[in-house]
Image 1 (cartoon, rainbow, N blue to C red):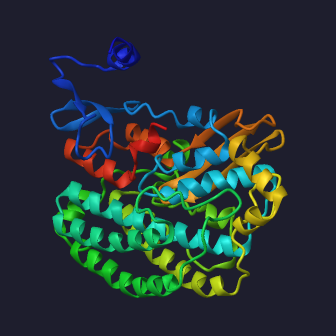
Image 2: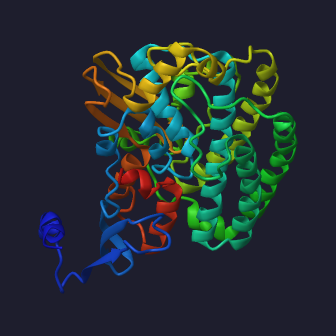
Image 3: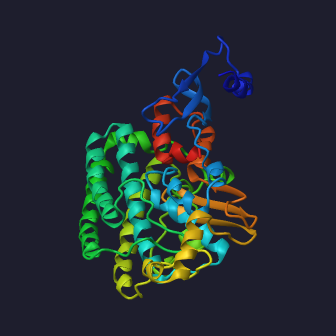
Length: 409
């Protein structure tokens, strides 16, 4: 507690707090139902008007980066699920992509299709979760129930693939663990036929709802200059009029082969960001429809052929002595990437998720650093909350779509 007080002492010293001015300092959180995790906001208030805001993080003590530096590469993969646990596959994939670029492995085309199917399903699931909790924070209980209903179907599809609903571990370095089961694409297609109508229902409940509009319009204004200066990404950046999506600008997997638009809003407020999330779900549906026929047009290979770094298929391990020995070494001692460093950025549902790996040729990363979008988007509260009112702080927290699990990585 003493260390916490010393860390915040400069903030309190700089706050102009006096009885004459009528300002006071209050804490919003860290145990607050609308904080989306253990977030403490230190607010200087004049009445209900916010004069200054300071986000205080670090209550979860997760230590992902140091955990990674004490695990072999494959061993760290399930741990990435726990970072943004609402979009676990995006974490799995970001780490796998960084390692694959480090070791120079090319992933088979069918594995790329399956990865993209899972990533876009995960994006829809994450956006539905955001919509449900955002609506609940503002007071719209019905939308919460409807959005969760559709989200259950995305989780059913992911469970049918990998057996897990929340922490998926659905990607492997070099490919994916499983091919799609018979009938999986048909179930996906049925879901995609129903989802657009559900999105229309959400918008019908919210778009012209006067309470919803009053709570979100002209609230949380973030200009394009401020968004770039604070390192915003994802919808927080595109909601300020800047068209930047890593899937378009620096394509990975097969995103350069599918057609989709990058929605942009120039309103710079919470309502504009809400509309972007709705449109992004429609674009994910568009991508998924294009991927369905691509699966059958590929060869049934789901793991890269790189014996030095990746275990052979199970059939070879059971029948060939060399493959069995190599598998034993990779599992017990881990792969040994060449010396070098890599940074791989991906467009997660919340923004730019990047993994930096420094390899010294050993079985463990010498240094691993994760660039999580929630950390940077959380810092924006210092910018957008000033001169607003206390009830609007809840709308801004929800609009930013932060998750403290990856903020306190």
